[in-house]
Length: 60
Image (cartoon, rainbow, N blue to C red):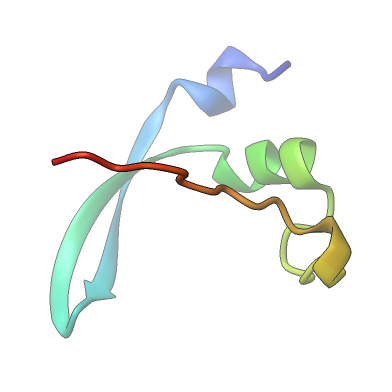
């Protein structure tokens, strides 16, 4: 669960992406959201705890 006030309000942030400055809209409480979802999200998980997303077949 999350609080509407920090999850639904947006803020503009400048980031360098691929060598270019871009402006992105992110939710105001992005740090609170990440903490709720992942705990200490700045710390790498153990290799055995990393989620794996496998594509078995891809048709184009």
